[in-house]
Image (tube, rainbow, N blue to C red; front, side, top):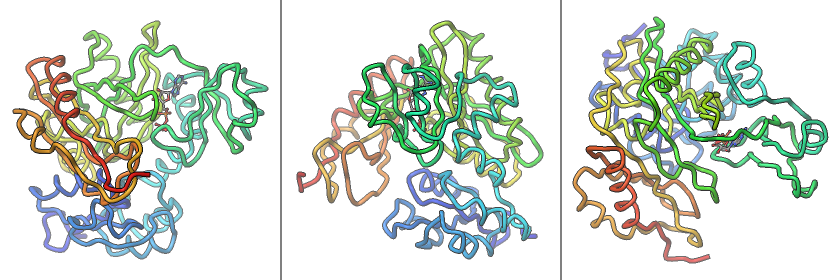
Length: 383
Ligand code: ADP
């Protein structure tokens, strides 16, 4: 078996979006080659991967063909062909995160059952064949989540009493109690083949209520030391329960009564860890590579407080992208712009991000917001 520093050693990545692109950026200093599979020939990784293959990561044959010559396979998205990963694992190819874990995470119902079985605190829930059955049995104040296929808030319905029944999901769902959320947190944890773990300082996330996706986040979260400890311990417990190899973002709710609950996990680099590129001693991307290559985990400490703002496509703009105001963002000392290289914009599409460093969380947040306001992602074609 080849070692990671051997000339032809190659890590295969399923998914060629921005997370894959930043993974490639982190692989350079370790001199690790990343080969990428994505259906879109113009995906963010297409121009920067060592090799790029156009193909569907959800298709059995495409994944087996792509994976069979690789030394290690990993993912930057969960919605991949798990049967293909089992087949490759049986051939002796290392697949991290393991297919067993991906199979659970792909289905929000199985994920919630897993939390329950492993005494990981989570919002009260039940599983139903569709939204109507859920509301009839679970009550008209709940949160419905499609068991499969949802992401970035698509696939989540907050049900209120006055909702008309015909709008409810017509597919298998998880129904959850509507939690009184004080803060939404994310704690990223890594675990290598040997089980060596490391955990990043907690991140606090603020959501855009219209798009239901993370707009701004900062680290460290503004919580007590005791809660920080509790959140990190819970993230480590979750990673150990999953027998993780790789990195995992553990998304949590801090309830208004002060309790931590795990909402969901993502066994890959995550939006809530973008800031680690500049703000932490080791980035989440390098940490993921270290974990899947069975190298020792890096120091996760923050160099200083940081905030990250997603650069989203403007409402009302669809088509070839134009960036306005990049020069103004670059005037901010300690603000770092990352553009993902997507050729087309659409409303709320994640087109890039800005990380801002500061002496305090407040200063970093202010800088990220101010720098973010300078940048507009538009298209010459208005629709
Ligand atoms: P996705 O995987 O699409 O991001 P999430 O499960 O993270 O979906 O839910 C999206 C958002 O919906 C959460 O960040 C939170 O703001 C809200 N939400 C999800 N579950 C609940 C719940 N049980 N109670 C209250 N709000 C919730």
